[in-house]
Structure formats: C-alpha cells, structure tokens
Image 1 (cartoon, one colour):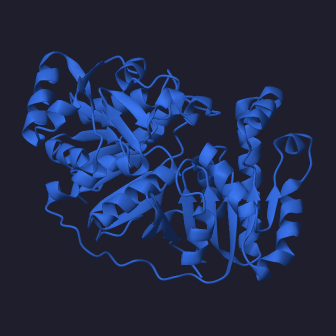
Image 2: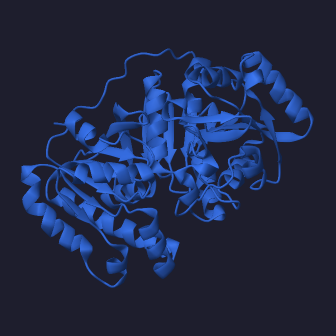
Image 3: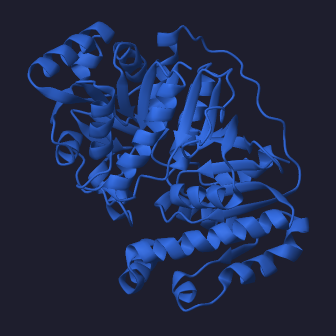
Length: 416
C-alpha cells in the first residue's frame, strides 16, 4: 500500500477514493477501522478508512483516528492523508485540529499542510481564506450548518483555535512558483516554529503542484482535492481501473441532509416523482414513521424509484433543534432512515442513493456494509460504489453540498 487515508465521514471517504482511483490508484474504501489485517485486498495502492468522527466529541474522534492510523501503518502505508470536508466543517473545539495534532504526535512528524480546496466543486483557498464559489465560507449557506456552522473563513484563524501548535500560510504566489518553492516555504515555516501550513489553491494545477511538494511529508491533511497530486509521488500514472458490474433490483433515495443543495435536489425530484417526508417532531412524539414510510414505499417500488427524506430548510431545522436539541434531532432522523434502509433492502432494493454524510454513515452501518469498490462518477466527488458481501448493493453516497440539482435523476439513470 502506498497511501493510507483516514476520512472523517463516509461521503468524504468516497469522494477521496474516487479521486485516487480516477488518478490510477487501485483503491478500496473500508467502513470503520477493520478488525482484521486482511479486511482489504492486498492488490491495492490506497486504502481509505471511513470514520464517523466529524461531529463526534473530540476525544472520540482522536481515538478512532489513531486506531485507523495503527491499522494503516501495520499494512505498510508509506504516507498518511487525513481527509476532511472541503468546507472545513468543524467547531472551535475541533475536530480537525485535535485529530491532526494526535496524528502528528503518533507518527512523530513535526510538520504538515492543511488544504481543503476542491476547485471542481468551487471550493478554493486564497490568502488563507476559504471560498465557496464567489462567497467567503462565512457568507455561504455553511454559516447555518446545524452541527458545524462555519462563520469564519480565515483557515489560519480557524485551525489556530483548534490546535496548540503554530499555524502559518503558504500564499498562492509561492504555490505558483512550483513544488520546490513550496518545499522551501515549508522548511522556513518549520524553522520558525510552525507545525501547520495552510496552503492556497484556486485551480487544479495548484493542487497537483502541492502534491509533488508534499512528497516527503509523512502526514498530509486536506480535502479530496489534495489527492490529485499524490499518485505521481509513487510512480502511479493515470490509467483505467475496472469498475464494478451493475446491480439490478429496485431503487430508492434516502435524504437526511439539510444543506441548501440537498433541499434543491429534493424539491427537483419531488416535483415529478413520489416522495415521503420524515418529521423529527413526530419521531420524538413516538410515531413510527419508519413503518409508515416502508408501507408507503412497498407498493410503489415496482413502478420506479421513490424518495424518503428528512431534508428541511433552515427555519424548520432550527425549530426542531430548539424543541429537541441539535444532537437529539439528528440522532432521531438518522436512526429512522437507517431502519428504513434495512426495510428497503428487505423489500428488494439493491440500488440506493443516500444524501448526507451523517445519514450515509448511519445507513451503511445499519446495512452491515464494511467495504466498497469504487465505480463511475455521477457528479464531481460522488461515484457509484458497490458493497462487498451479500447481497451486493449499488450505493451512491452523497455529501450534502455535492451534486447538481438533478443529481438523483442522473444517478439512477446510470443504474438502469
């Protein structure tokens, strides 16, 4: 194994695995830290371990990440990548800083980089500030994220509040001078006591140069975009990696994300297709909405895909959180959608689109899925995957903010 990756949520792991496989690395995605050393095939270049640690307590996130690191190093990983969201989802308490600190300590490395940029999905970093399209992160819909509201776009400041180490910046002017100039900037920052460098990137060429500059670093941190420059460090050239075979059976969509993009996607689908809404307040009142949703879906599946969703706009989310608490509201929805996923598979669903990182994690855990092969891309950062084991399931696991408005139609159109 050349590259061992630790991702803080499931959809982010899938995004990263797609990036690596598209660049020619034979990649497998594992769900959680494996219990066995043989959990992944031996003929792979990269292994991505998907954790559910983005919004867990920092101590738990650190513990899970260190366990993943130990497994990857035991399998011989030459370099470690800690992958987080391209919108740097975290609070002032973490979890990005605490996990990165713990990984540096465990590896014994003095220095690393931080770069969440993913220009294809309009996430760029300039002068240390994270942009979503033309907006600063703090002006984007991420300012209203129910669990990790992002109200500061300056990543040097954000990361600096999460770590006991010094955080510096490598600006775009240096990045554009190439890999050697960046390596010299890293050395200068390290000599002045910095352990982290937030690195600017506004185009793919910047990320490819950054990958080359990081050739000798034991640990990297960033979004999936940073991976596009890493395969060349191991002599891997872009090539064709066989995709999993198509899977038959009924199809369904589950959406728990409340992002602005997921709201648009749900509205687009619902305008022309069957949809059933899950209400957190009714769940809290004891109503078995999972049973109701499955009873509704059962007779419709033979006619075509159905959508079951808890996606809601910010005012509805805030109302539910005010009455139930943010954690409790989220847990109720995740548990309900996980139960529905099991029921749908029992009804013959074999193609499942899931919107939302936390929702995707709950669903694959409920289904007992432990490993995924990466298939073709649907939209940037979101591939079809196929579960290992029986029955084989085609799973499209989408981060809330990713995908075009017609993502659900596009995804299921590829699996007909």
